[in-house]
Length: 135
Image 1 (cartoon, rainbow, N blue to C red):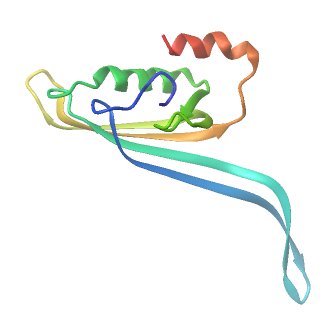
Image 2: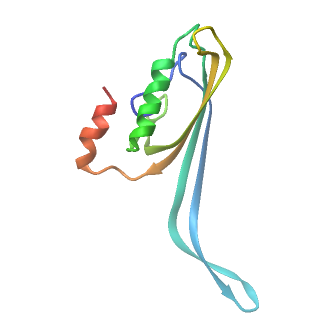
Image 3: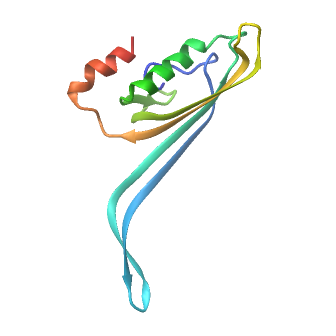
C-alpha cells in the first residue's frame, strides 16, 4: 500500500527498490586517510515500478489516486503486502508511460514509476489532509 492505493493485479508492482545513505563530515588529515565523522542518517529513497492493463483489468483509478497523493505533496503511509509498515514517504516523482494507445486515447499497457523519499512521522495537524487522501 502507498497512501490511498492498495497494489493488486489491477495496479501491479513489478519492482521495488530501496536506497539508504549515511551522512558523514569528511575531515582531511595530513599524511593519512580522511577521517569521517558520523552525522547521522542520510536520505532513504524507494522506487516502485509497475504496470497496468486498463482494458483488461482496470487500474486507472489507482493510478489517479497515486497522482492525487503526489500532487498533494503530503506524507503518506507506505507498507508492504504483509501489512508491515515501511514508514512515511512523500511521492517526489511519478512517471507514467502509455503504450499502444487505444481508440479512447488510453494506452493498452501503462507503465508507472513512483519515486518516494522517506520522511519523519507527520505532525498531528496534518491528519485532516492525510485522511482526505484515503477516502
